[in-house]
Amino acid sequence: MSLIQKQEMTERDLAAHRANGQKTQGPMTSEGKVSSAAANLRHGFYSESRTEAMLALGEDPEEYRHLMESLVKDLQPREGLESQLVLRMGQTLWQM
Image (cartoon, rainbow, N blue to C red; front, side, top):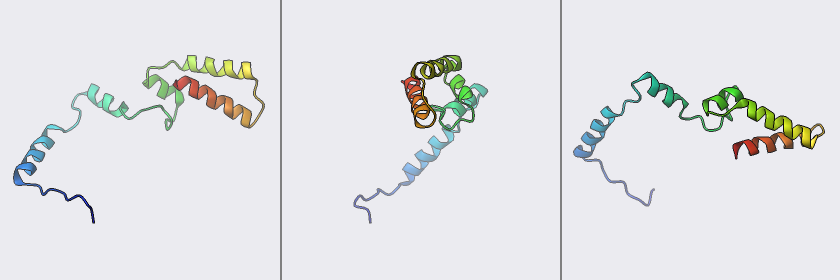
């Protein structure tokens, strides 16, 4: 049982909801559809291709590659945990 009682919908409210629903049917133009499809891309974490995600966000994959190579060269991580930490550090720096 909820402590907050919901107000019942009146016919006037239902009519207003239906009228507003007819106005919001989603994007109609091809540009709007492309924009809408890309709207949920936040940081590319679930993206199939990191390069594709970066391009969609207007970032330069070549700059990212250069940053990662620079970190590996400067820090010279060994296998395992160190290399994973360097990768994570590079990703964090890029996002900042």
